[in-house]
Image 1 (cartoon, rainbow, N blue to C red):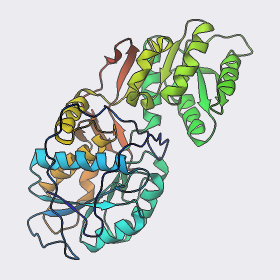
Image 2 (cartoon, one colour; image 1 turned 90 degrees about the vertical axis):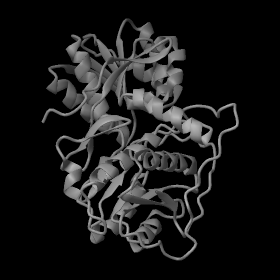
Image 3 (tube, rainbow, N blue to C red; image 1 turned 180 degrees about the vertical axis):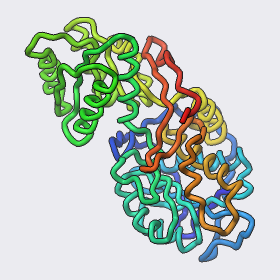
Image 4 (cartoon, rainbow, N blue to C red; image 1 turned 90 degrees about the horizontal axis):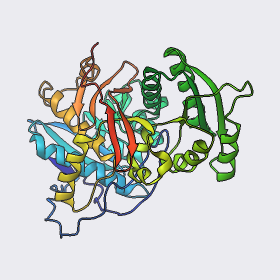
Length: 391
């Protein structure tokens, strides 16, 4: 069962529109509130004393997410989905307690350790992961975080966040399998763009292709238009596909400019998966991007709306799948003993709302990704995600 931390009264704060990139993850509301009045939401029991009750039959697991502060709506959505997973599975061997990282991730981690938690799920942002890992590592408590900033992985910290690198590699290899070998790219300035550039170069080479042009821009319309104009290589060699390694908003601005220059296959990243409005931009028609499959997430969204009266944030699935992972391992985790961290790196991996995934020795989740194509009715899967891992 899920319960509230004795230090923090959890409260809902609606409506943030943040795009958290590389170490912060993109966040977009999935659906508007339901028109009909929602049914009563079951509230997890509060603990009024200064410590959690004794429970020798279940393992203590801490969910560390922002319930206050600017990312409160995202954190609450993750917490709601995690609570749904507890209810769906029964959670007979797991006692999950929610800790608010809004006032400070380090303080939340210290409280969770003092309460005897042996596994941390979360936090959300890279800087929070660093603070939580610094507290958890000396205590031998593993952290399964929701960030996608690979710089914070390792040493007992595992990342479930959606990786831009894997998304780029998947869509480039798919394009190559469809006969495209010459690639161009539009990259935003900064660390995200530099990392994406390196991944594209490696992926294209590994797939037997070539990057013939790559241009950076600073996200202003003028700079974007200038970058598109510079894409044509000096040698005159044409490109068959162009990767727009940025949000759907930027892609929607760049696509019409690219179409005017001639036929080209537009490629994108997992950032586009949370932006269904892309289908309303005609120039985005036929664009491809790689992301986790959405079929089971849509089922989660329906269940979430029925219980909470509104749609979840896209990252809520990470909370749900983290609990599924925990419940699976809890079947072989003796209550009161240290968490069996070695089981996180099972080569067969795990399965959840976002499909198959497994953690490598580096602590980064390798995900099974589908190829989506944008059309008038939205994005459809044109190459399904593998259902598991062969090695």
